[in-house]
Amino acid sequence: MSEDAQYRVYLGAYTGPESAANGIRLAFADDAGRLRCTDTVADSYDPSFLALSPDGGTLFAVNEVARGRVVSFQVGPDGGLTEINSQPTHGSAPCHLSVHPGGRFLLTANYLSGNVVVHPIGEGGVLREACHVVDHSGQGPDKDRQEGPHAHQIVPSPDGRFALAADLGTDSVYVYAFDGDTGHLVLKHEVGWEPGTGPRHLAFHPDGERGYLVGELTSTITEFTFDAKTGEVRPGLVLPLLPADFTGRNLAAEVVVSPDGRFVFASNRGHDSIAVFSAEGFAQLGVVPAGVRGPRHVALSPRGDVLYAAGELSDTVQAFAVAADGALTPIGDPVPSPSPVCLLPA
Image (cartoon, rainbow, N blue to C red):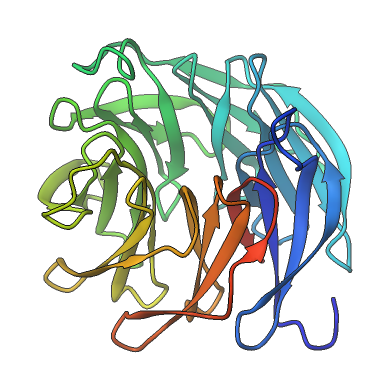
């Protein structure tokens, strides 16, 4: 890492004939949060979501293809990536993955096939054969997007005792008890959202007692409570992600919570904006231009003082300074990067 760099940011992308991307890129952030992108550090097909092991020594990526795969990479001292191995996801179009807090299991959501899968992680970041696959079932009222289950995310609860899967196709959040010894999932609760919501992604508040879920199809965000003892999820207040006068097409995308727990940020594709909310009292503070087209993903710097927006359609990444009141101010011009769809500050 260069002397003026404060941290690294890995960029996942969609590859293929319509994209100039050919894998995972690496960028370095200076003390102001400005990015300097380098070349591709790992050739990989459609690495559309990325995650790091708890110790930072291994990076995991999906290959969002018809016969889905997950790949593990060793992270070098300079941030370079060396492929370790890969495994099939036993599903189609894996679009999200996360690492269990214990570092021994990788959890993946397969979008097209509507199932979730768990892979053990061996010594040195080696992925073992899948130990558990769970299929979702059901549908929603949107005939184009909800004709069947579409698992869009699976994340562990903060203490690792549960795993929560958001399914866009069934308007549900599935809460699984997670066995930390075997990696098996046992369904405890299936929590229904308003029909047609299209649950996409959720993020926990640092207190572990609440969280926020974005509905892709309704452009809304729902605050929910979470019981760490039982895994029970209770949806609460629902707020819009868009200004009241916007009438165009929009798809909500990502949601993140600031490390201090004061603010929640969510991105809009179509309106191409970022909605800002206060966590205390849960209220919208404003909606600001994302500075990119199609902000599929947003991510915060390790300290939470910079927010990055990945513009899938503009081939750019925009950085924002996060003020003490949650206000976002662009940091310089958007930085070119082909088809960015995931940002992973490390």
